[in-house]
Image (tube, rainbow, N blue to C red):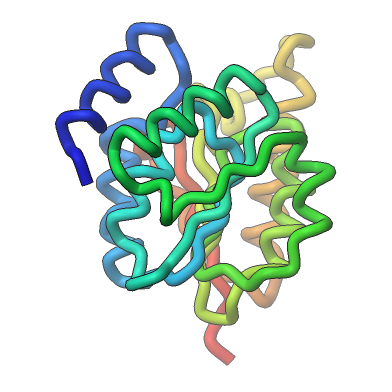
Length: 197
């Protein structure tokens, strides 16, 4: 993997205010991926491919990442970036709306990373649980959303996002089959897995 190119991708994304995974969140995810040693990762929300490229380092031999992005320009950029870093054999980019694409996927994944439309998190969770390996992990980034989710925030503009993120948290913390940890790194990261039977 070409780390120099990876740093350039990161710098450009930050300059252009494209949301990419924050360093402290990435550190936590790196640790999890080292433990899980995934063969297949599903990422919902590719942006310019930065996180998928970072995650690809932890894949087992012949492992693969399926990542979904609906913005055409970002898909183009992600494809170029993946090529530049030299990991295009490990990353499949699906172009389109995750709400439409997810139900068509029937793979089993070791890790699902959710980082797309906040208002759709409960739907993404349902699909992620359907495709998660019994020992797999679901990571939901930006789950605390600038602190709004845990406050009595109720401004109209973000209300749906906040409500749906709260619903996601409720689901993963109250579902008897799942154990969840919520970390205050970056903009909040929820780590969920099936309880050991």
